[in-house]
Length: 124
Image (cartoon, rainbow, N blue to C red; front, side, top):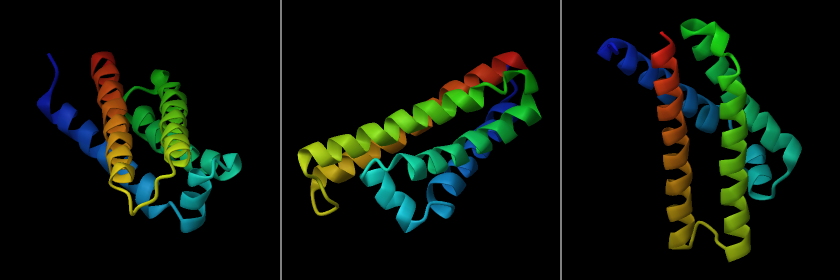
């Protein structure tokens, strides 16, 4: 049986990881690089997510360290996909669909975390 405490603890850990990596550590330069698919800075950004996930996983189920690589790659695909869609559609923050894509981007990141949490909980 899954512990509610474990579920809530992992959920909070992933929310905090995402907040730190996506907002506190993301500079204007990284945000602009994401918008332009400048791969080196985008990789720096998603590496923060991978590292955050690695720290969580090493604490809970070290043998599943590879989940951090999955999170990194999924985060990369989501961010590059959103940026490509914004560019292709010519969207800027002044366009309503820009914000729809941002919401979809964030929802996909949270769904990724949900899947990671399920995998971790089943390994505990």
